[in-house]
Amino acid sequence: MSTPLRRTAVLTAFLACLAAGACALFWQVARPVPARADLFEFTLKDERELGEKFNALVRSKLPLVDDAEIQAYVTDMVNRVAKSMPPQPFPLTIGVIQNNALNAFAAPAGYVFVFTGLILNLNHESEVAAVIAHELAHVSQRHLASRYEKMTTLTIGQLVGMVAGIALGAAAGAPEAGSALILGSQAAAAQTYLSYSREDEREADQVGMNYLVAAGYPPQGMVGAFETIRRMRWLKGQGTIPAYLSTHPDVTERLGYLKDRINQMPKAIRDRKENDGKFLRAQTIIRARYDDPPKAIGYYRGLGAKMTCLDRLGLAVALGRTHDIAAARTAFGEAMACGGEDPLWLREIGRFEIKSRRYDLAEDYLRRSVDKNPNDLTALFEYARLLAQTGHFAQALPYMNRVRMNFPDNAEIQTAYGQMLGQSGDLFRAHLHLAYAAVYENNERQAEFQIKKTKDLAKSEEQKQELAKLEELFKKRTELLKRRIF
Image 1: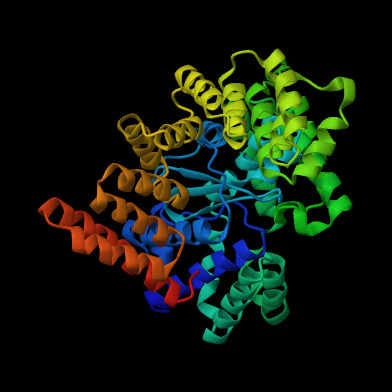
Image 2: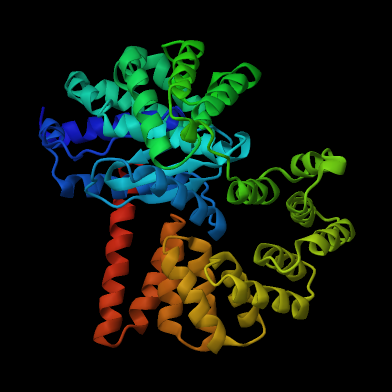
């Protein structure tokens, strides 16, 4: 099998896995064992190229959470678990996908994605970490890598059938539709290439437990995660759970041997306590800011007297997303009464006051939030926009540029930065960043328009070099679109 066709087969398998919503943390080609790279005839350069394409795919088709607190929390947790893995050739780049599925996956070259459903539906940080540890174990133990040699049996017709199923499912906004088509036309191939064996699952359980314990988490997190996901399997059907809990060995059996292993661990490890402070903050942000508002409001009001200060903040944020401004204002008053000067509370009430058009109050809250937590780029984004709105461009532009540099492929941030630059009189960079925004939105017509404007304004050598980088990115993404990789 030629290298290009082999590369296409591996790419297609990953996309099929993604469309089915059943990706365990996916493979990374050149892991510490040299035979892995030899198996696929891929170099690190090949892996980097594929990783960039996968990353572009995910960010193009799936909604990502750009809240700085959520991003930092998930990044820290994944890196904490990954410390026990063998050395990796690429640094981990972690994203959070807004999706209720209990899932996580990784593309080549260290791109890792975690679904918000893991955080929202599990009970402790240790349980989320356990799922990530299990998936990382599949990577480190080369379980998927051992199957890719069989990719040589795929025909062009099978590849087209899989890709067509993915394209249809993605276009309809229903990955399960793509999965159904794939399984309908290529059932044998999908089972052959995307399934784990009994031995794979046992090993991932055991090695994943090693990673979890080495990261300092209570080992009971893995049992708790499996029990919760098994319960959701019966409540919602298998489509909402990761593949590793719908395959053999039986989940009850797996829970049994994991509990036996925990019982044999030293008492100091068995007695580790949960530390869920950051986890509960992340859960609150996800539920209040990204879940359906009536659902989130119902959840918080259903807590009654059990509501914590964090729950009161969640209720206020959820109400703030509705048209009931009066109820939201009352809820924020109660939340602030017990939340005090916590920068998260200040950030969220600041955002609410922007919506309420009380800009002086909003500016005060956001400034205090940024002062207390300079690393909260979400607060900094809102503060920079507000400063620009009131004409303070000299202050706003450095803040927004800092946010942009941390989220370079975020179209909303690129648009805000471009608009600020335009309002401040820097027309070349204004059109440059509005062009980047259009490229990341896959808006080809708008990108071409903004690139033309940028080209007309490019006079210096430095500006021409910046234009060349933009045009190269636009060319690459346009080619990907035409090949229907997206």
